[in-house]
Length: 85
Image 1: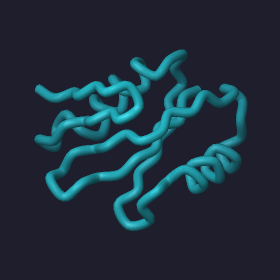
Image 2 (image 1 turned 180 degrees about the vertical axis):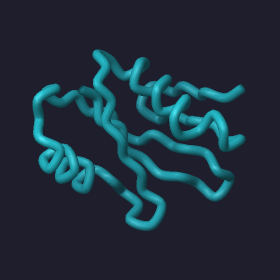
Image 3 (image 1 turned 180 degrees about the horizontal axis):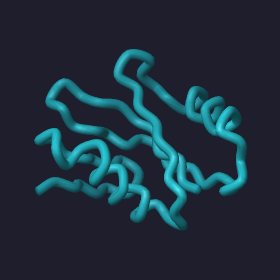
């Protein structure tokens, strides 16, 4: 499982600030606790976990689920990737 955390900026872009590999069987409560520890912006903070094997797959899923239909971009500060249409 990959846990992505970041924040939404004022332009409607999702900025990914951390990517953490976690055991697939980790209980949701522990995943939530880890996300809370990593989120840097308490007002615009964002976190989601994805049952994938690597960071790039998690980014693609995050883009498809949270960004694609919102006219924003996903900007990954972990590996320097930008996803948009």
